[in-house]
Image 1 (tube, rainbow, N blue to C red):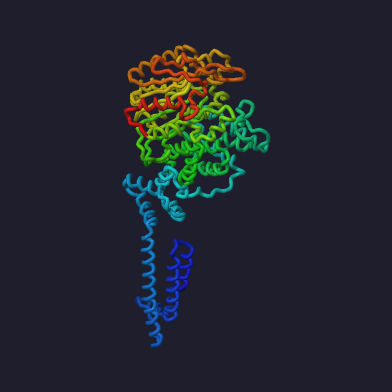
Image 2 (tube, rainbow, N blue to C red; image 1 turned 60 degrees about the horizontal axis):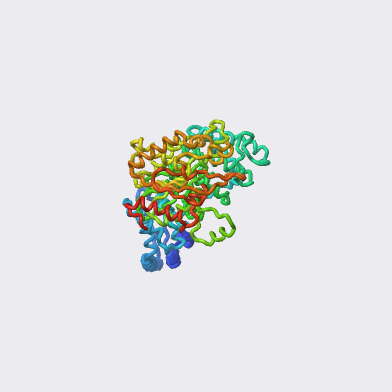
Length: 626
């Protein structure tokens, strides 16, 4: 192929890429191509001379007439002039690109994100995310250049532009086989190091889903006579019921079998399922929860990023759903080893701050729900009872599904706000599992949560606890256990305050009702632990009072005064005032029922204002002003 042809092909390729201004360069290339063609015609190379003189490194040129020599000399001069003009044009365009401050800034920042100095890297990521002047092609350039560390940092920057992230890799159409892929993935995982009930229901799900496939998924999908009709809380599409149950099992497996899940293509299967089930928040939530568990193992980080999860998590973090955003925040925090030293295990959720920021964290506030509660729904704003109240709520900007995330974070931005969840993912399963017919005791939960909180760094700075119902008993048990553990002394010493919402310090009359009624609020073991004036509760309360006084822990208790509707025509006072009275600190009675005692009606309500005041007073010496 001739030199001219190669030059022409190169020019055509250039015409398909590059920023504006390349056309001028192309014109110069075309002119040089014309000159090279002219020169090619004027010069003839005698290649046969090489064969004749193979021992010499010479190439003989055939003698040209004087006219041809003159043409050759002129062609050379013209080519030199063309090359000079081309260089002048190229230099001018290059200098013009340097005159564009945004183009220069982009490449400078991208270079600084690779600096060996951590402070320089962090500042570069922040400036990269906050610059509003990037063009679309510059975002695309950055998406191709940034490394794993920078991508995670950008994803954790408030309101980052999602164009910084590459889309997930294209995957084959798995819509018809997504359930099959999930089942095969589940079947490939070992059943060691997981809860006995997870083993039971994993095996049952695999067996029953095979039967449902044989029947072409006819009828309502469930787990058979001894299983749980899990479809009650899900949509009516059979395949989604199977997927949801398999995901529940994978949530548990992802805590101990992350390498197996990644090696067997789990990240790609979950990515495809996430895209297919965008209308199902519950399925997406469980998928992100699995990614958060996998991210606890740093060996999986590269695979997670390469399979496109950073862009998905960045988008979910900006979701209007606080629950979805909190699951994404946990996953990204576990991926961010640049600024986060803590690890957030399953059940420990970051309500604030969910992104990187310049606000120094001075204290922690932990929210602990009661039995049958949850990390988010327990702390939502008070439910509206009438249509008029619902319309009024919609017109208010401060209506929230999680007031610690929305209100407390705004009033005290330099707090880290965590919400604790336990057993909710297995609460329905345990009741039907033949391997374990009773729920775990308070002592087991205490030790399990203490281990998780230690990994999350709780106890390294001042702490205020906020607990509802039996969650308050669990907090007292954890602090007593911490007092006996040398590795957890910091948690006890840094506990500055505890706020109890209707906590049955002395037991509850619920235990005196029929089994069916009391099970509605307190399953099995908890019923026996909550019997009025039980020896276990008395011992727990006396021990806690001693350490609270020794460590000068501030206490505030709220008591319900309105009966709670727990069934058809049944209303009772779940935790009477005398049981909610710890015998230490202030006790405030509130005209609400047991479920709403921890759900302020609005931001300027007494319940929230008094709660906020207590937190600020308990941490007054740590400068929590906004």
